[in-house]
Image 1 (tube, rainbow, N blue to C red):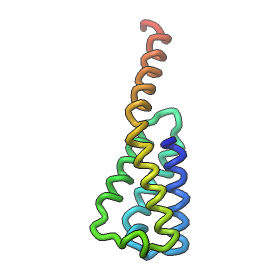
Image 2 (image 1 turned 135 degrees about the horizontal axis):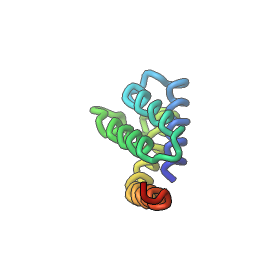
Image 3 (image 1 turned 180 degrees about the horizontal axis):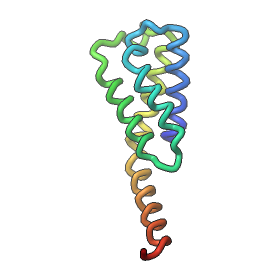
Length: 115
């Protein structure tokens, strides 16, 4: 679900950047979302994706002044809806993903046998 949420946020942010690039949302989120997009290429290791999602969420929380959502363009509102969804997925799934990756790494290590 995190990957799907990240992809939705990337698409929404790129749409905002093309149609309404002078918004405060675009100014603060464009670069972290671009890095999030790059992190999606590494699917065997969840670390880069989880770090990039955390950075995007932090950037969103760091925006000092936002207009009310009703005053935002449809494109900007779509970014915030995708960011809300990604935040929920991240909070719900992050620990489980990290544990699953640790278990997988341990199994691979044990399967390799003693050296």
